[in-house]
Image (cartoon, rainbow, N blue to C red):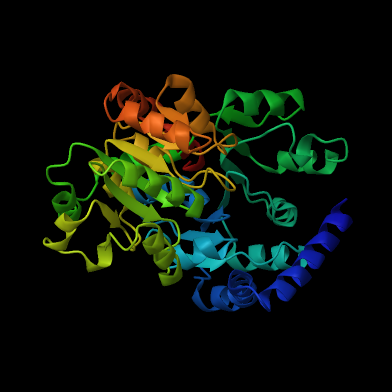
Length: 405
């Protein structure tokens, strides 16, 4: 199985190369992987024993970030190496100040894995959530490096638990400890003979609570919502989300909508402008005068969404009409109800918020309208959402007590 896996990785590398001829994201990935060793040779401290964190992309990084920053506070002298698989993580966080070195992760071939571990000499390795790279795990085991998985989730349909997945299941023993998010994951692992695991929850709760305590005041947002009793903040939206949100806004002109699209390039803002008939203000062009001339503010900058949620009566989270919703917890922590589309089942926190009555899934415009109308009149659901986040913090402390030793 190891040989088949490694052949598959080489084939995957060929696909990345072919895709890079046409796709910018694939081009960034291939280029980043190709130069990773040069960057590491140039910048890695040969005397350091890095604590290595690996995240697939930006979302997983946000789960690892509380652990990185707490370890740095507790042990200021440690060196942190942060790697990404996806350009959507690396390109946004390549200058992250919490890490001493940030790089793409070279493709998971046996040669790359052995070379990487020999070059970096990590003292520990922490893989976040779904990240599982067999050749790297084997190379780390050969070098006697302790490996941890944090905020992990396991489901029956994963390869580990298939009839043909015994090799993958056995590789879970290379982890010194698996910190899983829920009891379902732990029960599944134990049923399959994996004992090196415990439930500690999801570090994202700690991350969003930290953001909540340090939320920025945004004067232009405050000017925009001045006098408004009903404010909806729609975060990380996609075209299908925007269609129904704009429809609701046009039928309810007393509402103020802060729209924060997932993609902020000019072509997408132009599509939003068509939906709104040009009746909106871009955040990058806003001032104290023009924000009062519209009931829709389109935020075309990055990095302030988590602070914008503080101004909402209701939050809408985008992505639920596509591959899946974005971060619900960043909004829920403020004690506001959360609404999203029908594709949310893979997200434990979304299921949890629905179960306690703090979040609501809407399959179409009609249901969205009914939910918005109800939630804008009654904030009891918001208190439930806020309490849910606060009650689930603490995973970072549990993890750092063990991996910080």
